[in-house]
Amino acid sequence: MDLGSISPSPSPGLVNLVVEIPAGSRNKYEYCAEAGIMALDRVLHSSVRYPFDYGFVPNTLAEDGAPLDAMVIMQEPTFAGCLIKARPIGVLDMHDSGEYDGKLLCVPVADPRQKGITSIRQIAPNQLEDVAEFFRTHKSLEDRVVVIDGWRDFDAVDELLLNCIKASKLI
Image 1: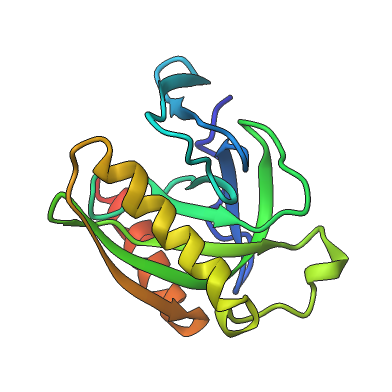
Image 2 (image 1 turned 60 degrees about the vertical axis):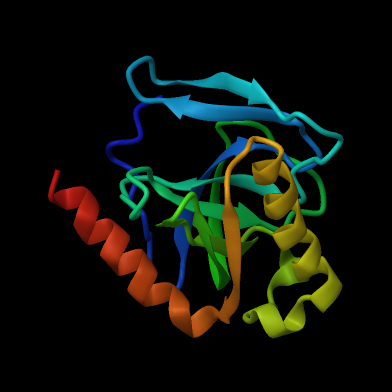
């Protein structure tokens, strides 16, 4: 699975997202670029499970030295390695062990039921809090200090995405 030719943003307002972990999983998969496949990194220590399909935007580089993290709200979980064209609707700002580790929240373009969702204001606050609590819980069980700085709406996405695209071209 060579991701080199996949555009991070196929058109304005959209991203390509590669799923690493399907919603509901405790298995933490990561893309292994050397082998071109998904690999099991670890199993989460607790009963917490990923709230949404979770992955990354290919050909980006975030401040933590990894591709930009992204989650996508799906009605049904997909699978590790699935490519999804998605519309970012917000950013979860957090710091993991002192490093900024922002995560995009997206909806899939292929789901007509989510066509009208363009903002995190359209997502139930308790659902957003569930996502933040997932990261607080699973990171703290791995003895990592996580600070959730809160959610920003879709207007914060472009700057973060462009910075991560630019950073990937510098390496």
